[in-house]
Length: 374
Image 1 (cartoon, rainbow, N blue to C red):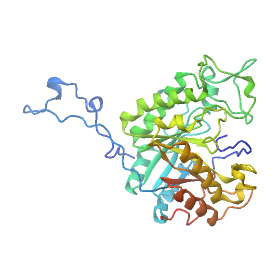
Image 2: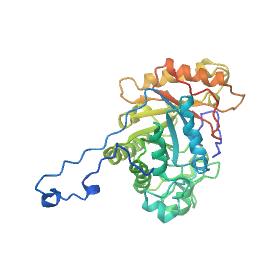
Image 3: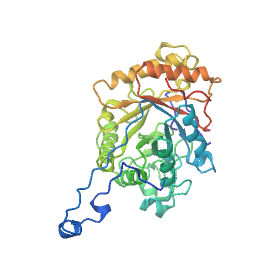
Image 4: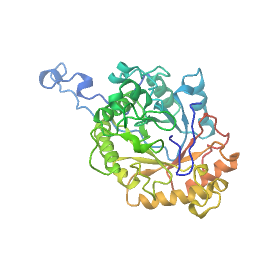
């Protein structure tokens, strides 16, 4: 599952019509062919196409995660956008989720259309228009390699099971083959569609090898003879080459322990950083076991746990230009979380000089007052 540490697994449940100033028409969009066709009537040359530019970051990212299912409910997206009154300036919305579904069908992703993974949970252009109207920075979450939908519909693109069939996690979910460049293209096609709709940033999640299930029975077709982290880096390099010309930022979610440990899943933040604009470590205190950071109960000291984890990431990313923005816990696990617990984590992130924070709650219900500015 996505939100997991070495000692804890949490099963998380799923609880426009403008491209904005960021997208200037390129030659293929404008129809300019060069020569006489690119000259205006009267002999004046058409102005050169401008390269799309990313919109400015918020001074401090203050945002929440929204599932595509929640975004499909009448008025629900407007409710989240109304949190700007409380300090929200960023929304992270599922573009492609853990089920392998895509939240919109336009812009078209050819493979998604063929296999039926493109749904109509929301209108991507309308979402962008509403976010821009509120001054909200819009991040599109793309779950990459955990993809049970693709594994079912295109089993040849999935991790195989020794003895036959598609390999599944302990939760019964299929994963795409991380070495299959068709999988890379599919996911970046999805990301590119979101970028063309006007999303400001693409955040890759599950950008790793699987961590649960019978890993010894997993068979990868045509595996590369390289460290797992190198495979992830090659995917990010490919994604960056395709997405950067669209003027969209690129980021990734990583496990909270990945700053100091090789977890065997290919997540080595320092190696990923050169290809990312931001890294979002999932530093949920409830996911750390007793004794981590020499704390008897990390979940009982959420602010301290976040501070120590972010110190590890700051050290791991020293000298890199990549922004560090943590995912913080706004849900109860192991004990009830209060506003003070959420605010304590936020203050720890600020003390660590992070570039902001995102709050995660699997049901999409966020603690009132947690998004206030500095």
